[in-house]
Amino acid sequence: MKFDFISPSHKYLNDVLYIIRQGITEKKTHLKKGLREGLNTQTLVDTFNIIGTSRLDNKKWIGVQKEHENISSTAREDIYFYLNDDNYTRIFYAEAKRLPKYKTLKDEEYVISDNLGPNNKTSGGIERYKAAIHGRDNIKKNGMIAFVENQSIIEWLKLVNDKISKFYPDDSLLLKCDNEHEFISTHKYDDESKGIFEMHHFWIPLF
Image 1 (cartoon, rainbow, N blue to C red):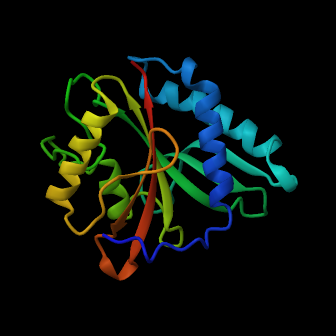
Image 2: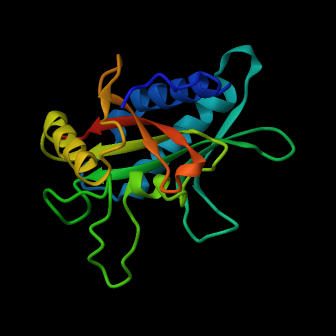
């Protein structure tokens, strides 16, 4: 999939990406393999929030919190970024995933759930954004953070991209960015009338 349609119109995108990159740089040695995903996520969120609310240029203020509540569903985004206006306007959402998923060696729910559970739960990271369970229609740029606990980044990248090719052939693969362990991809919503969205991926090796 070509990237000609990616728009730079997200006013705060560069600030959000800076917050994430800087937070990971500062706290990656504090993140632990085998620790509950939520605890590693909380460490990052606390750091993101300090950077966004006190260390941005031009007096910008971007708050960051964990587990965004939705009115229309029980699904929660792991991380959300917001402004200090009357509505605390949300500007960016991010989902955190372990690679591999808990209590497995090679399984993952980064792309799509296996749908083998009793409730046929939609739990894949990219899958949830495509189904509009995560994110918002008016926010076309979202993020994912992966805590990589085994195998190499290259091995996981091949596995994830192979899965995208199999289940979502009209979407782009994860493509390498200039920053280490950072990727970008674009995806169609399941409801194609909603158009296309962009994903920024940050992978953190913990081995």
